[in-house]
Image (cartoon, rainbow, N blue to C red):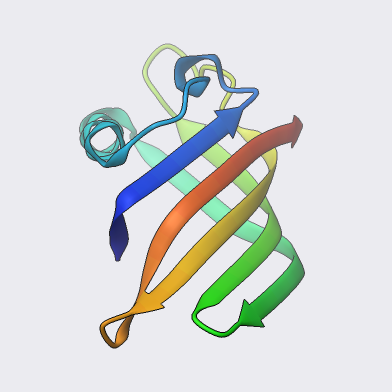
Length: 104
């Protein structure tokens, strides 16, 4: 479901400050799967869902809790996430993610 040109921007998480491309996202997912002992991602509130032709933007507040060896490294807390989806070739693909930690 990831677009070839996907980019993730994660503000407020020191390990993810720079925009991540598809290869870096795959590496982060591998790291996550190998090290996280438990996780909980839940939507607290959908702030908006906008569909404009072949593009959709979803903005939500999510709650994140991660159990990592040595602590959560500042990831757990409330995050505002904006997902940009693009429809092409009969499928929706995730084009970009803007991930901003806004509270504990």
